Length: 196
Image 1: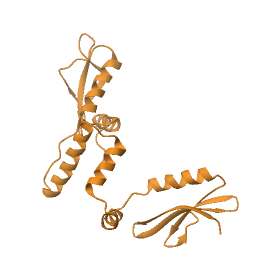
Image 2 (image 1 turned 180 degrees about the horizontal axis):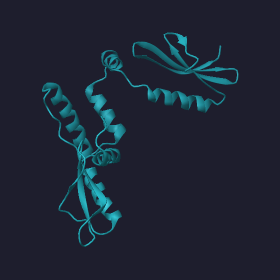
Image 3 (image 1 turned 90 degrees about the vertical axis):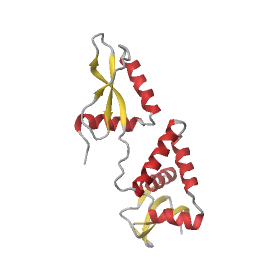
């Protein structure tokens, strides 16, 4: 029998899934086991221990945690909402406005559960559009809104240097608690519409 490494066991879509590394001779197998049976199609083989460990970690990241698993953590391991929120804060490095944004998101989610007709506030982001300048060549920051095509000009001016103007809107978006990814999504939606 080969050497075993750490094992992940979880219930995924009603199936008990076990992911473990087994060493046999000079080969490592990252085994995918469903209800006690090794699935050879989903099993990964390598002769490199570090590759096996990294592959197992990548597989584990791609498996979403289920509500059933969260219930088990609450019932059997004492997981609390405060612990969960603290982990989210630590993992994302939330401070200041990021914490406020998280609080708003949690509040909006809960309010939506209480009142099904509740509409969460619309996300907005500031962007610099290279063609939007005033008569003096100064960049005019614009606002894009979640789910809307087009944009709205502001009354602000951020000078003639594109990089400076971009830094200014980036700072505003950080104050709003927006990630670069969210700003990019809103920008794309403003040009192409929201994906359904």
